Image (tube, rainbow, N blue to C red; front, top):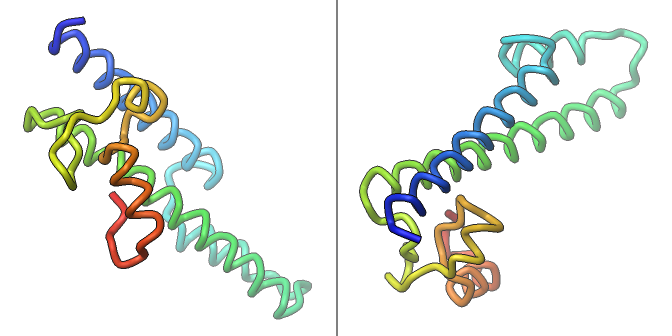
Length: 126
């Protein structure tokens, strides 16, 4: 497969993932609304106990953090495509296995570097 075809396939996959994630976020919020607006509406119910509110708020924040991180990973992969470095490990500079990119198009690291990053919390996750 040529590099341009390889990149076009992965760009389309990343753009599709991004669009699906944004649609999911919009559906969860009931339209184009900020998380803050949704949270205010959700947590402003007097019948809920403080513990229920705290638990629900923590869950909302965790979901938001996950979605934000996922969008950032996709955007960073698209940026690497634009820069011509997509498929190159951001840590060691070696090629990321095509099978890894097929399974996870936003992957920024080869498997050995990813495993190292996961076992060493001081290494930032990208």
